Structure formats: structure tokens, C-alpha cells
Image (cartoon, rainbow, N blue to C red; front, side, top):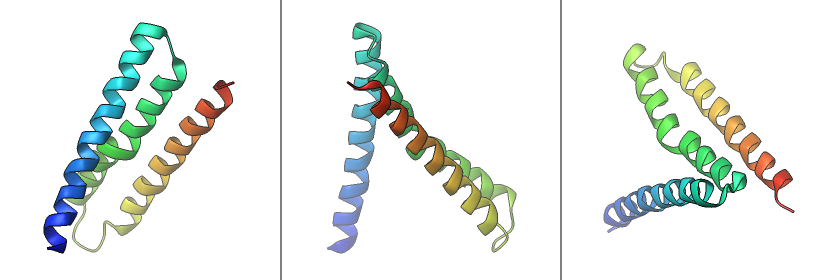
Length: 93
């Protein structure tokens, strides 16, 4: 039961993340809303980009040796995510 619910939440996260990205880009394209674009970029960084970077790290390092590199990816994407959100907050009046 927990496994099915977890899988459901993972898929829901993908769908909602994709919706945020697409809607944010659409809002920027149609209305030149920079805040929407920044939020979309933040979601891309914290979602698919982080996943790709972590997969690359796991592929390039031996088992057990990837922890420092994974921690670096996690910290860097978290900082980028938060910088974009702070920038968004600064833009919204």
C-alpha cells in the first residue's frame, strides 16, 4: 500500500512540476511575466536538472565514492533554486 501511494506521489510530482514549468513559460511568453519564468527555471533546476546531474555522478563514480559529489549537486541545486525564488519575491510587488 505504501509503495503504491509513494509511486502515485512521485507521478503526481512529475505532473505538477511539468504543469508549473509549462504554465510559467506560457505566462512569460504571453504576458512577459518574469516571475513566472523564474519559478519555472527554479523547478527545472530542483527537479529534472538535479536528477540528471545525480544520475551522471552515479555513473561516473564507483559505489560509495559518489557521496561527496552527490552532496555537491544537492547543495548547488538547492542554492540555485533558492536564489531564483528570492529573485522572484524581489520582483513581485
